[in-house]
View 1 (cartoon, one colour):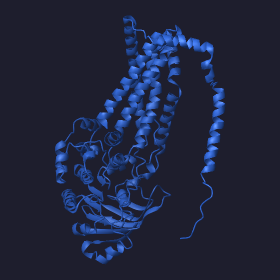
View 2 (tube, chains in turn red, yellow):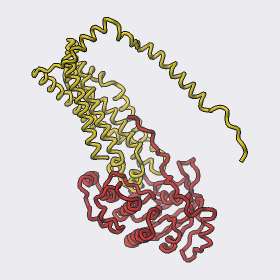
View 3 (cartoon, chains in turn brown, green):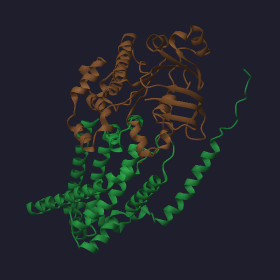
View 4 (cartoon, helix red, strand yellow):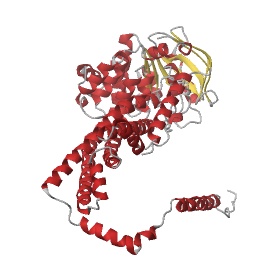
Length: 270
Length: 276
């Protein structure tokens, strides 16, 4: 998947909302692996959602494979979404679901309705789910329920979905926020290997600057909705990092997933 | 820090007083117009009638013939409720899928729904309102005229009213559950049904099931009430017994109702235990 963003401005909460990303210029080539770093609230999550066609830009031009997805019909745009994979920071897993079901949900865009229904009764391809989970060290949890998993296990379970999708771009938000250093490396390696194998584009937002610099060839620093630097890793200096995080506490709490508050529902009446 | 004098008055207090007074003013005419006169219950004549009727209650009717009749009618009542609810589900489930905003693809990323989608949602919502705003008793009265005395009228009445209720509440349950799972599935290109089956339903399955079983319980009660207008089942017998002032028969049938509701409660508990 190739991206071309020119002067792209993105707002929160519809056309009149506050500006989240200011006039970004960004070109991403097929198969590139990019780390997105920056302080909390810099707009990393919004940028990933925009790249995933899950957030409509307010102005500027946005091209995915040379076309603007928001100029397409809704059906065509939705088909395009099946070729992208957005993995939010909080794992989107219903607590009462079994791990095997939740991982296989990545196949939904390719399934017919009948296949989706029958897989609820008897998982269609438990072997594939097991292989994906094993890559993240979770093979033994195949038939466990999601609410029996720890926070770190849930996070890896959410990432195991990436391997079952047929996506050509992985847009991963903070995949390591609940993991210890060893697991972090294992998880990141699994993601990068898979991306390389498929020649898929990987954009990964990270809080751990050292991990980003050690594993990614290209690093983008985002601050207050603007790209501060976009450079190969050997050109990223400690001074640039320090400037990026200036006046920010490194261990500030992670930003809340701010892409859905407008859909808080009114309480149901029983 | 500058010293701030404490505010002398709680700014919310006046509004609360006004609300209370307004509620009382509204309630008074309601009491008058509803002719709510509890003291009538205690005048001598009604006390005597009640006494005789209630004394009969202490010895529920228990002849074999009567009991078989009650069981048969109970079965009819349960059947009316179950058939009615099943038919209601046939309409309510598709209506829920149309009404709920949780599964909107056009809302994804744009914060606004396309006009045809919004119009269709609004239309289905109005149909649901129409269906449930007519009480099931009124539907039953209408259908007793059309299809004649008997359970068919009861089944149709429950199906229509409950379709409206279930569709509305299902949609609200889906909308008030956590959207994260279904939103992510939609963002990754799955269809509306896929996001429903793998995202929204597992989040709210227990609530949906317990509400459905509770509605089944209501339908049992409702079918009993509709019996009074000739829609078959236990209610029709109860109507006859009450008109004959046969307290012992009414007592037996009331006991039957309690047992039915308790059974519905038990079923709901079992189902929830497996889902929660």
